[in-house]
Amino acid sequence: MRQHNQARYLAAHLPKTLNLYDAESRERQLQVPTELLKVLQFLVRPHSPDRLRQALEVLKERQLIPPGDLNAWAASPETFLYPTPLDPAIASPARQKCMGLLQARLQLPVSYLLPFVALTLDYDPGELAATDKLGQTLHRQLRGRYDLTTLTAVLEEGVLDGGLALDDETEPLEERYVRTGRITLTTLHKAKGLDWDAVWIPFVHERTCPGTSYVPEPQKFLGDYSLPEAVRAHWRALAAAEPAVQSAIAWQQQNQLKQSEELRLLYVGMTRAKRWLGLSAAQRGP
Image (cartoon, rainbow, N blue to C red; front, side):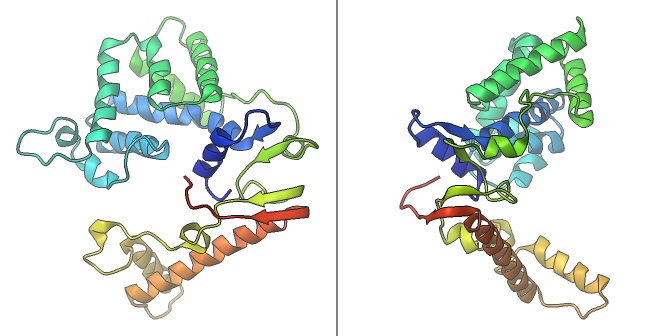
């Protein structure tokens, strides 16, 4: 697959009787400490725009809130979380998720917060097991100093120094991915350097391959291009001592680079097959 959410979709819809190895699920379990840390940091400092934004990013990545301008939502945390009758009613589902987390901070013992956050993030059984293991590890490290600030600090230290190993598998990575008689779900990125007898690449849609770059609605008053990409193009021209390019032309160049990379990734996936290759599109998908 090209995207992680496509792997989650297939894992949920393929028959349970298949001998399936969901490599993306394993990767998601390794992201559990980082996601939990971002939410706990928000609970410690809900008035911080940066902390609110990173919590919203986690919720968006988990597809628990609708798309929106996270920068605008996080710019004024008080207005976002506690709007007055004069404030516009925006991002109601996102605000409800954040308010539920803040209420849990006030009403639950600190030792219950990790499981509650995991349930709020709609973790699958593997991710819940990783959360439980993480909670046991932190409980041993805290040794009775169980308050939210200390819990967050210990978790942050563990995430930064990589001391929270949740992957118990000792089998070499390549042998996990390529094993006779088993179906592996993985992304095109992770497939580099591996090969299988049969490869199937679903969801080959124009929206993602070759795809087009997204222009946020608030930036469209400037033109039909993304301001950050145009600025990067000007920086590249300045660094190379070349004449500056127009923003619309810079956007076209960026689109060409993106589409070239998407086609290269598709080529990587197609050349992983030794005997059989299938590609498909769908009328409905993630």
